[in-house]
Length: 217
Image 1 (cartoon, helix red, strand yellow):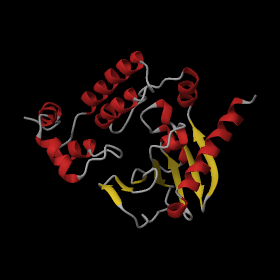
Image 2: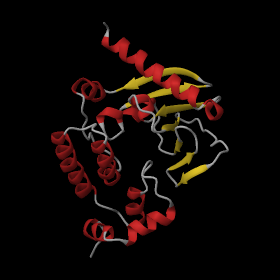
Image 3: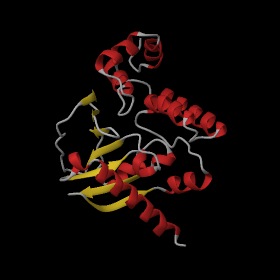
Image 4: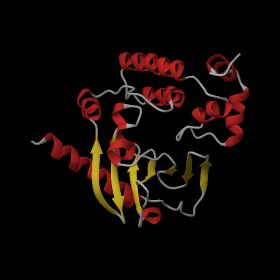
């Protein structure tokens, strides 16, 4: 069996399933398709990203959540239209924070043009676990880790190792200012509306901001 061919066929089949399930919203246009619905067997949500310079119009529907990073439309499963952009599908895939989700598809007018994955994704599937691989949003990754741990997608060892690496990235990065701090919390899939986000910021998490702000006295 050719492992690469088998993996490409599997990811392509999952991407086609996503397009079929969301056909009322995704029949036309060019975009990158992702989420666990492509990278894993689960269909908790479907993430849609801009493909290079191509722009997509968020379809009409019941808005479940909205922020500057994403708009979630009611569907089964929900569709998340994300503002996170990379020039190519390969660059987008490599930018995701955990190994087991580093697979995406390029879709145009309902057809799957290509699928991409990383070596870390192959290793995660072979070992049946995952790990944190780096992120532009390490603070949100620390919260996402809780979700993946609960689902059993990381072993105890990999969860601890990943959390320590996430903490290191948060400390090394710091926060430029208050808006940068809120942006780190306003991640694509945390599902916080503006009112809830303000509640988080007003809580003891503000102490974290004060400790790590780069412009502190």
